Image (cartoon, rainbow, N blue to C red; front, side, top):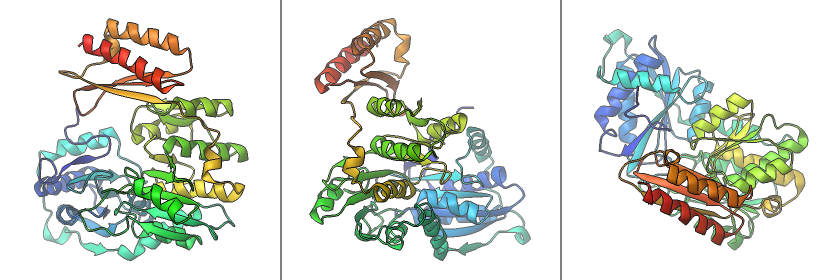
Length: 443
């Protein structure tokens, strides 16, 4: 079955347009209840700070109660916090209302199972099949009820703090924390303060319409100015739902997901706690793969998307993986990508070694990347075209193991993405253009 509504991270779209409507949310709640909790139980609902979150929270609450489920409403909390609290409350499943790094006029609905993991493809397909049956209401004596549990967020804060190295604190460290006016705006600063840091908060004043606007992990420019401006040791940027992390060193330089994986992997490897290979994606910089292998650390690639990184980690027995964008998975700490827990691992390395983030990342030389999007009439697998494959083989021969070629069709647009990594920027651009020309000619 081809899923019509669920993408790689739940259902997402523009508010008020199909499927992100109140009617759909009500039917989705009813369908999810029938599939995930047919015998009843409790469901947790959390959200980020978008204005439309109130609307979808009410619709989902009504759908679950009508289906006979009790509802816990925890309000704004990072997506990984919902995963943790779903387990903490022993819920049948959890729901997050968020569109992550998208602008405020988008929103989304995603689910966690009872263990705090993402739903399987099969479970999402069953929910979609149930949508056709509409919303149902059980008899009055079996209706659920709703309770607000906002104050229980402290349990998640304590859980995050417990992942920091035992006996260590952040006392004496000045940290700028940018919460993207999103779901982490309350808990993230408190976590750092609880560990003793002096914090400078930015992006912590949500209006419902300013989430991710000129701030957060997708727009870290303000953080890059602020960190050296206030003489902080480091900066932390979350995205709107708190599962994506970018950091900034004391010089104001952005440190992306590949660089953060490098820091965490080397530290875990040194103390013997790194199990299995580190897992990246097709888009992970070749420089990280090369640096890890030179350090005796295995590396494997998954398809783009943190759910595929998670699947590969489970397949290989690994505990550390992620994407360049900052979706980092530390499965020895938690079940899903958690920006604050990943940040605490990096801060822990800084405390243990006495080194700055700039020093810790100095050993990783990322290769220049050139990306060209080739618009096509309809998406196709470029490797099935002999003319394209011939050029790609020639480029790979020219790179001779000192770079990499990636071609993939966009999952949302009629585009073929051509990416080349090489040791020189000009070489990467030139080779990418050769392949893009071949793709265009082979359309």
